[in-house]
Image 1: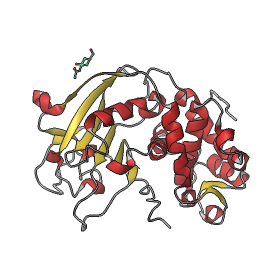
Image 2 (image 1 turned 45 degrees about the horizontal axis):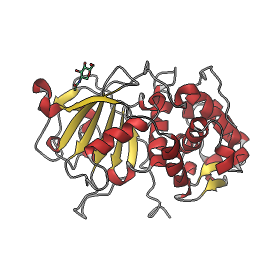
Image 3 (image 1 turned 60 degrees about the vertical axis):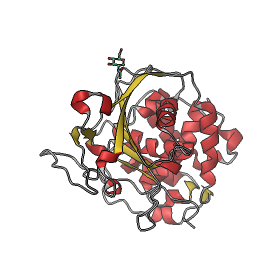
Image 4 (image 1 turned 180 degrees about the vertical axis):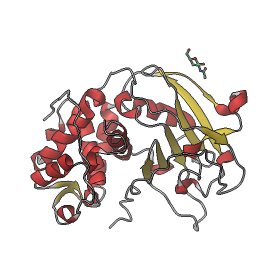
Length: 313
Ligand SMILES: *[C@@H]1O[C@H](CO)[C@@H](O)[C@H](O)[C@H]1NC(C)=O
């Protein structure tokens, strides 16, 4: 059903949106089923090695004791149980973007799940048109202390945070980065496309939602449709082969495809809308240490934790 539309959608604010339209709507995918798109996305998001170079901030004298604030508990409560000193900051240059990416990797992440080079490599496979909307990606371990809460993945303003076992699920990566595009590609600062009247209309015009999780709210439904749209654009229109019932969500697919535009096509280069790494703060050796945030710092409410389909039922 692939259609490229060059214009960017203008969105208008829609305060106090009622959720009732979502609660009772049927959906295409029950818990976990949308994860079938993970291997499909991995299959199309292939490209030649695109890493130009990388370093850790440990090896940069004036950055050694610093960390982007989005990798700390000052910015994101999920990170409060960790010492920021236990993260390594990787600064990576890819050949499809002239600005480096900054990824934070916790020392207890299992190498068997995803090592630092795997993290850097995988990140480079995400189409640059989507990847550029993330300032910092953070990978955290599965807690070995049963008293600590398990995490999944979420997006918080310029950052995306993944517990290690969710960073290897490509459908989850596409979901979280759809949130990033939703937030940062909008020409109306601070307003997500998914908070617009136009998105609500698109949802209303369809008989179905993408997934049971999309019932949570309009923002989550956008990101779930984002998984399907990412596959359709990247595969140049092969979504109907995967989902014969795609027409049940076609207005939503149209909307998200317009938002994504040509950005999700493969083989693109350039990152004119690159969201920068968040500012640096000193690392701390204390769990939950609060750093002093500069005045005027904007904090972001994270999106809903991605559902753990083994527990979500
Ligand atoms: C990577 O290459 C760029 C461009 O040549 C250079 O500016 C940058 O310092 C290099 N970074 C590392 C970590 O080597």
